[in-house]
Image 1: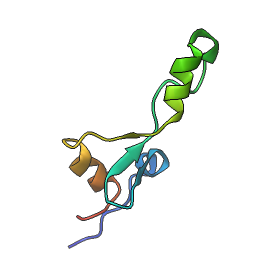
Image 2 (image 1 turned 180 degrees about the horizontal axis):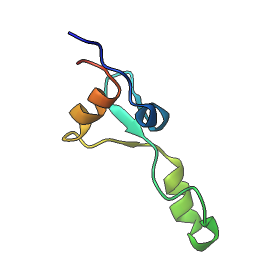
Image 3 (image 1 turned 90 degrees about the horizontal axis):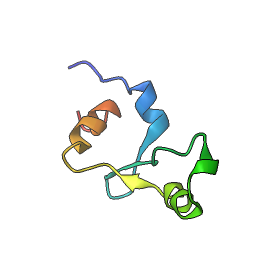
Image 4 (image 1 turned 60 degrees about the vertical axis):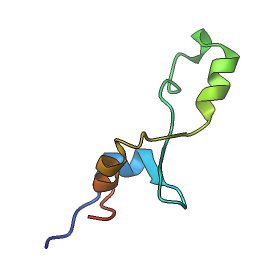
Length: 66
């Protein structure tokens, strides 16, 4: 069986947690922050988890577990 290569875009954006779940950052924090409320920006700072249904696809992009 050939080895899988890690997806370059995925390795910059998602990471695995210690328990094996996939963590991602939230969208909407790259520009135009002055139009967003402080409360919204505080919430955007925190990381989020990938949905369970998308997790196998993300693990495949990271070349983890086949």
